[in-house]
Length: 276
Length: 246
Image 1 (cartoon, rainbow over the protein chains, first blue to last red):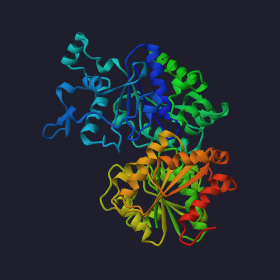
Image 2: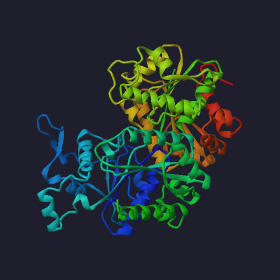
Image 3: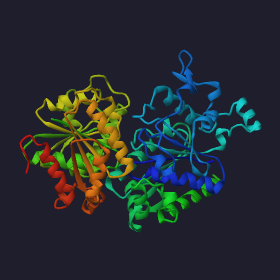
Image 4: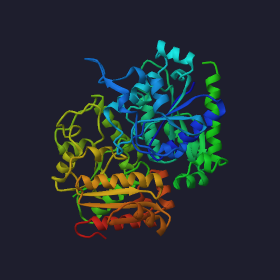
């Protein structure tokens, strides 16, 4: 299953790409796709095609943790896979959206933060499913987390996405537009990645966005020193849809940008099939 | 004067902060441009170049790792974590670190403490804050004088702008100016006015010259000075200047 985190400077078009990518992934595979929205500002909802909602994971999902342990832990009936089942928003194409609460809707509370982080932690490969989760699978009452594709939309800052909200990912795709600022943010991320080890292998690559010609993707590859695995073209149709608050995948499904995102989905799935 | 520039990531707040800072400085006001953004790229918009900007970012990261010296006072902060920028603007980079030392001038002060201490040096401070709303949320009331809320005429950006404007007022900003950026025409500005209840709204037109300067990594004041966007931002600086800027 894919474990993918989209990162990069704000305004580069991450949320637009993540929204389309997630739904196209669900359509191609027919499998469970969970989108993790770690941005305290609204945005991803527009690209997925759901109503914006400030709420994060419900506070009732957690209880105070044991002495000397984490401040909050998930309650037994709100284990990560049940939390997803109960609290994730239903997006089109069967995609589920679990979001960190939005900071001005009162959704960004300590309990909600802890609940969200624990779902992320549970997605890290090797987090063994519990006995009761196995039972649930057999009873068909919820999809265990290891059977979800997980796609993260991380906020625009470069601060340590590899830890915290990006811990679940084995691949970080940096969305870069052809501007010096976007390149600078990408370089810092790539630099942070080389210094980072949390005992797991992960890949950092770039998705060039809003490119106007072939030279742009090459320029981005050269200036970021990252492999550019997809180049999404500048697309007036998508830009118009985005700016007017329409969901690009629904409003302009045949646009060049959407086609490029679809190719990226295919490429990521194909890479998963390849022997390591 | 303590001016903060806030808004959704990618809306143009860094460009706005840089042009306002340099224009005020050209008019004779001593200016400190403070970069508080995690993606610290105010230096690029000011015109010091990508490499010099990256060097300052890298220094903050080394500070975070314990590999660089802290600054003892505000002057040392300006010196060590800063740079001369065009038009006599002093750039200072104060991105948050993971493990701040409480009270340390270069990493342990709250934003309002830092703004106040910088202002006490006799400068007007133009601060490019973290994209979104986080820093404003943590600000103590009375910590800022003027807030420039940068908004694009899109539902997503207006949504953020609305929240940010309300919050700036709650925090005691005596003046809140909404900068409607990348507008296509009067209707775009009107849409922003309808959505956000505020006395002052200034429209900054979409300008290809700004896009080109962005790509090149140069300051719009150097490479797009004749364009409509820079002209509008210069006018905005005029609205802020204590003396009236040309």
